Image (cartoon, rainbow, N blue to C red):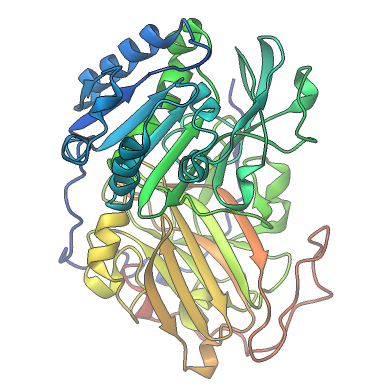
Length: 482
């Protein structure tokens, strides 16, 4: 049973409720894309042949029929011509082994990727084309060895990617043949899930054992999963959703941040204990679901803010999901206060509301600078699906990335709103708005101009509140619609 913890609700003045209704819709995102029109499943083998291949092909066809894409599954490498590959949104390499393409076919596939094509590698796709460097980089890592088929615990590292967003905060326990790889892809790909080597025997990657990852590669997209050795894998609902999510991202039907990620410290990891460094300001609350690792907005207008310390130069990443036409935001650069209007009047809000006016819509620096709406609309997942923000503050410069795409670049010139030191917070906007957050993490960056306070090893609070700015003014209407 999932535990629910409701954060304490602070009282607030009635003035906070004035002007909570957002402005008229002016910029709406494009309708969500349907899944890719055509997928090629390629399963030629020049070495060991998995008896799960027919089941895997049937599974991809079933997923396609249920999700709006068609599937062709030739064994013939003659399908790898420029003209034929151009017909497909993605090519699934399903447990291929050995040297399966000739030089001309390799060249056609390289150009397909460079022209924006997509690769999905399943299991023994990592045991393929060892003498083709382009393929090795695209797959992310080559197979080295494997122990016997056995149960293991999989740790999900990315909770927003469609291949792993359905998996909760507990380990993903499943049985498969677990590959060891010759190299670790973490420096060049976004690791989505990794193996707990203490949960099984035969792991050889010194405790850092990626098992699924994604990356942008020379103009195209690449997703790889090490699962899928057994026929039974393709009957597991969680693994089928994992595979479907990888295909949907590869064909562009879903967006995600697949840039490499290292050096971040979790400040909310889905557990009640990780909320000890947060405080609620204003009415409403954020409700914790430990099973799903999420915080869901309840009532408002208030804000949950991180009070352990003020931040200088940093990268803040977090995942968020809207239920429908909802409203929330992330505040940065404000002094400590029990009043949420301190953030409104002394900091900046990165908006979450895709149907507001341009300077107050998703990705905007609310009321100050609109996002690049074309880039935003292309990068934005629709309501019901997870998105990832990176909010990058360096000196007075604030950049916003949505699912890995930069959509805003703003420089502060107002001394009263200096970004050089301040707190961060997430908004609970009002009773009609439901937005969820999870996986909030921080990484300190080199200071710009003057040093900020670094993240200590244990992320301890600083000694006392900062006085770098005066206290917040009385509430005004400047935050209406936030």
